[in-house]
Amino acid sequence: MPLLRPEGAWRGVVEEYRAYLSLPAGAPAISLREGNTPLVPALRAGRGADLYFKIEGQNPTGSFKDRGMAVAVSGALAEDARFLVCASTGNTSAAAAAYAARAGLPALLAVPAGDGAVARGKLAQALAFGARLVLVHGNFDQALAAVRALAALRPDAALVNSVNPLRLEGQKTGAFELIEQLGQAPDWLCIPVGNAGNISAYWRGFCEYRQAGRCRGVPRLIGAQAAGAAPLVSGTFVDNPQTLASAIRIGRPASAHLAQAAVAEADGRFVAVEDAEILAAYRFLARQEGIFCEPASAAALAGFWAARAAGWIGDGQRVVCVLTGNGLKDPERAVAESDPPMEAEATAEALARTLPPELRI
Ligand code: AN7
Image (cartoon, rainbow, N blue to C red; front, side, top):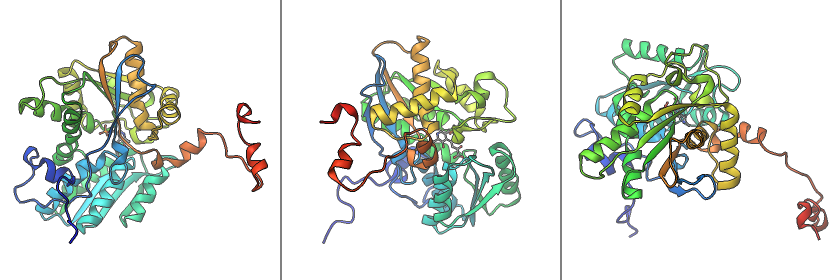
C-alpha cells in the first residue's frame, strides 16, 4: 500500500501552523498544500547585500494569497458561512475561487472592470474554478467598499478580503518559514504593498516567532509601493491610483494603519518606485536570475535597489525580497516586455541562422 501521507510531507499552513493560528477550535483544514515555498539566493541582483527571494508564486494558485485564503476558508466553514465574497485586483479572487471550490462553497468575486485592471491569468483562474466573477464599474477601492457593505447585510457571507483577521493569520506563516529557512530573521524584508495586509501579516509573524523564542531579532521592513499608487509614502489616500502593476493599484489600503504601525516599530521605510523601475526589476529577475514573477512582485526588488542606493541597507546585510506572485499571471505584460519570436523553416540550416552572431559558424 502506498502511503497517503509519507512521513515529512508538507500538509499546508493550517495543519503545519495550527498552534500559532487563532482559528476556531475544531475548524477543518481546507488545504491545497499551500506554503513551504522556496527561498532562493540571488546570484546577480544583490548589489553587495546577501539577498534572497521568497518565491510565493509557487503557491497552488500562484500567489501568497493562498496562505491567507486557506485559513480564512477553514474559518468560514467552522462558522457555517454559505458563500465567500471578496473584492480583488486578481490574486485574492483567484485564491478565493480555488479554495471555494475546495470547500464546496460558492464565491462572489468583485474585480475592477476595464482594460488591464486585472491581469488575464487571474481572470482565467477565477472563471476556471467556477466562481461568480463580477466586473465592477469602479476601481479596487470602490469594489472593496461594495463587498464590505454586502457582507454587513449578509451574516451568511464570509468576507475573505484581508479585513478578515484570518487572512493575516494565514499570511504571517510566510514569516515563520523565512525564519525556519534562514535559521534566524533576515536583517531586512522588502515587500510590495497594495492593500497593506501582507506587510502587516509578516510583521506579526516575525514578532510572534520572536515572542515564542523561535528567533532573536526581527527584520527592518521596506514596503514598496508603485509611485502612482503610494498613499503610504505620501501619507494621503489616492483617489485614482495608477500603475502598470495592476495587483497593487490600490489608493485606500484597508490595512494602512497596521502597516504604518509595523513599519514604525520595525524602524523601516515605505518607498515609492516608478513603473520604469518596476519593469527593470521584472526583466532583471527573469533574465538575470531565472525567476518569472508578476510586475507587482518585482516592486520588492525595485524597492530593495532604491533602499540600497539610498544607503539604508548596508553592505553584506541579509535581505529577503518577497516575490508575491507568479509571472504567468500576467502573460500580456511578459510578451509586451520581450522580443517577438522568430520564424524559420524546419531545417537545421534555417535554425542555425537564428542563433546570435557570436554563435554562428
Ligand atoms: C502579486 O488580489 O490586493 O499589500 O486583491 O497580488 O497585502 O494587498 C493583491 C495584492 C502584492 C499586495 N503582490 O499585497 C488582490 C490584492 C501581489 C498582489 C500585493 C498583491 P497587500
